[in-house]
Structures are given as structure tokens and as C-alpha cells.
Picture 1 (cartoon, rainbow, N blue to C red):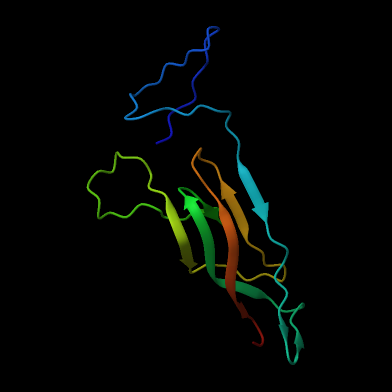
Picture 2: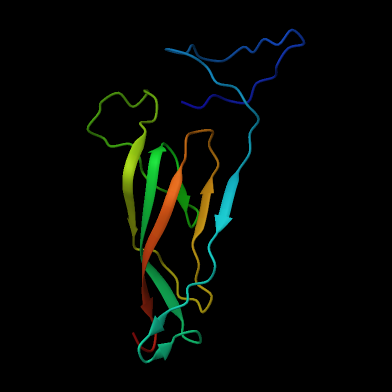
Length: 135
């Protein structure tokens, strides 16, 4: 579970607000950000470059991941079947599906981010697209 920002003393010691159950891992904070190229749809009738598009569904293939954001929205990794919400964020391997992505645009793309110091390995993305004015 992420702790707040702390200062390292001249002797190399760090004092945390809460005790750890097993261990601590310290590092510098940074934000991960990536953006896909715009969606280009090719059909038998031709391309749909000039049409407005909307990404309807995103499937993120992840490995040993605890945190991920798609289009600035956090992807849920914790389920509420565990009553211990103060425990560490669980890791997940598999497909995380995000539905209901809003907004039409001619230059539609997917933004990937992470702003918490947790594990993230993104193996790939798959998505479904709706086209305004033709499919």
C-alpha cells in the first residue's frame, strides 16, 4: 500500500507514518504516460479516416499488475469480496475490460497512465470502435 512522500535523513534512514507488515520499498515518484496512435479503421469499402469514431470497449492484457489508468480513469483491481480493505492492493494477471468509453473524435486514441507507485506490466491492448456515419 503506497505511503506518503518522506525525506531520507543524512544517515539514509526513512521514517514512515505506518508500520509495514512485511517490508518497504522506497523510490522516486514518477508518472507513467503513453498514448496510442489514432485509430485507423480499414473496411472492405475503404478507410474511415474522415469519420468521427468512439472507442466502445478496451481490453487491457496485463501481467502481475496492481494499478492502471485508461483515458484518465482508474481500472479497478480490488473486489469487495474481501473485508480487509486496508490490505495491500492485489496483483492481477489477465484481461481487464473497460466499457462505456465516452466521446466521439476524428483522432480517437487510448491514453495509458499510472500515477501510483504500484506494479504495472501492460502486455497489449485490444479495442472495439464505433463509427459515426457508417460502420
